[in-house]
Amino acid sequence: VQLQASGGGLVQAGGSLRLSCAASGRTRAFTTYNMGWFRRAPGKEREFVAAIVWSGGTTNYADSVKDRFTIPRDNAKNTVYLQMNSLKPEDTAVYYCAADPTSAWITPEALSYDYWGNGTQVTVSS
Image (tube, rainbow, N blue to C red):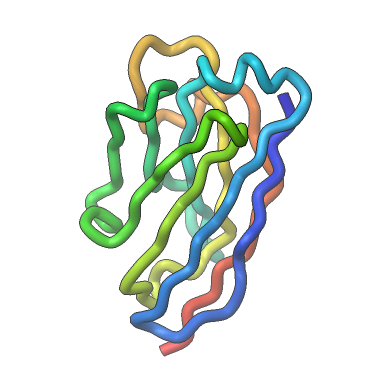
């Protein structure tokens, strides 16, 4: 499966952005994959942001984004989103979506994700 992320941009602190991650290729399999979003800020390690189980029934968030970000998915459109509200300058990073085809439960561990999309830049100005 191929993943294409989009929706990044420049926004002022306190603003909102919605990232999209569209799957192509083995789209039937997409509905069985747990999906995650990760980010890498300049000079920092890649970090987990959010994940959602294949059915959409369970989600998990990093403490730094909890209550500000949500990760809905639309299996009919083979797309997962990252809705980002109340953005802060420290949210500035390249954001990546990823698919985990094998784990029984959602995980924040990047090594569990086999498929990765291109990155999309999010810049939050103060």
